[in-house]
Amino acid sequence: MPKLYLLLGGNLGNRAIYLEQARERLAKRIGEITSSSSLYETAAWGKTDQPAFLNQVLVLQTMLQPEQVLQVIHAIERELGRERIEHWGARVIDIDILFYEDLVLQTQRLTIPHPQLHMRRFTLLPLAEIAPDLVHPVLDQTSQSLLASCKDELEVNLYEA
Image 1 (cartoon, rainbow, N blue to C red):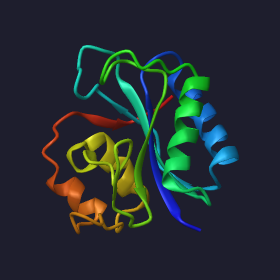
Image 2 (image 1 turned 90 degrees about the horizontal axis):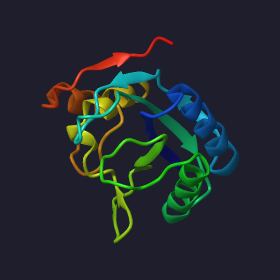
Image 3 (image 1 turned 90 degrees about the vertical axis):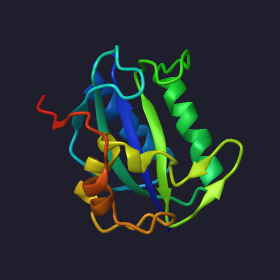
């Protein structure tokens, strides 16, 4: 079964509960979660005048195709109260597809691997925690080496509830 790497994040409400609810729904509707990173707290990226985010990377095994995964993710985000009001705005939940095996895909709705993951410490730190040797199929570098060369200086800290 293909391995799917997802980034979960949110900065409104009880962030840890929203991530937990997202994990439960993803496991039921997309596939078994085989690995999950620690939770990390991160200053907002892009639009910085908002609360800090909690982030986590998951690895799932799925029988769904990438477009099907995207549809399920958007449904889960809506169910949990996500409103798409402004780009990079505050949100209760955000679920991004980072990798789908070593697939390279570019459509109008979906780009895999995630086009900005190599520039975001809040993505690379939890990814490197659980998959340090995972090779980016376009950049041909491991997640650990991408983290080491990442120029993003936003603070990313282990979250302690």
